[in-house]
Length: 487
Image (cartoon, rainbow, N blue to C red; front, side, top):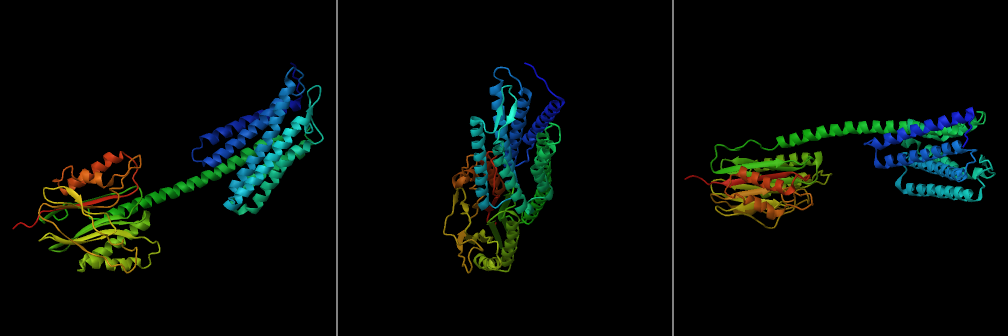
């Protein structure tokens, strides 16, 4: 097998070989870029794969052009068919990239993609028919490549796609940065300019060189644009994470955290905790002396997450405490707070509240349950059990709501446990919920334990159940053990 190449042939082969190497490097960079959107990565992977097929098949055709050895003719027809098909698919993927970058409205995007598919089908049909009938290209008896009279038909669909790209770049030019738009224009114009220049280049084929160069430039610009956007997003994400962390700290600082809370009071023992989820939530607890013989207990959960819920939580907590310290009953307090929170509640947030006032000297108390979880009560020497009764609506959910009180009484040795829904709704990897039964099981692991140990036991039960599964809600609990008055 004899290969005879002119200087022009050698230059063309070198240009194609360099193009193959550059495309491989781009394909490798696309594959290892971990912050590219899957859609963008897939588009560019297919795009450069088509370019590789296009220029590799072109290289093989050039290498074997004019070779008369047995079997070469079939190889030449095959690689030329692949070359023409790859050119159409390359244009198609270029158009898809332009369509994505143009940020076309969803209702129009489907129709535009359908138009592209029609162009692609037309190209496949023309090239395949031309392969059979020979009206696009041919090889003479010496296996030299030649273009047939209707060769121009093989360029109709790719040309239509280029015109399609041009219309998108003009119509949606404001939806992309100027440098990305310029890079797309370069890919459209460069091959056309190379074709004109090639007419006076003495056989040197600049089209492939121009195509690869424009593709690499376009890819580089788009990747730089994506990287800059990614870096800006990272800065914003870091700032938001810092702000959320500060919000979490502020939220936690609003809650009483010094225990024992009332070291001079022997009539009761009290402990509370809040384990925040990753997002800032709206859980809160509170306890405070209204006077020397009355203590208020609050357990609440604001709907929603994030900073709005945290701000709503702080407002609700301040209002509840203010009204209770002004001598209002739990029902009166929630009636007033409900009216205040409903005013200007554009975010439509609401808060479930369990609010109680306990008379320390007698153990008698009144409570209002505004859409909150059922409290749990343990009688002395008994077990923790749910106390279920009809609830009132959540606070700020409905205007002019009248809240109803429920009377209860604690005897010496009794314990009261209240919590937010983050406890029974703690989930494991199978998305199973802890539930009330498992919560009661954890509470009754050591029913005589101190309030702090009771909360630790429940937390241990939650951790054993979830086994490291991510939690999306705060876990807030409070336990009061009533000792009674020493006489």
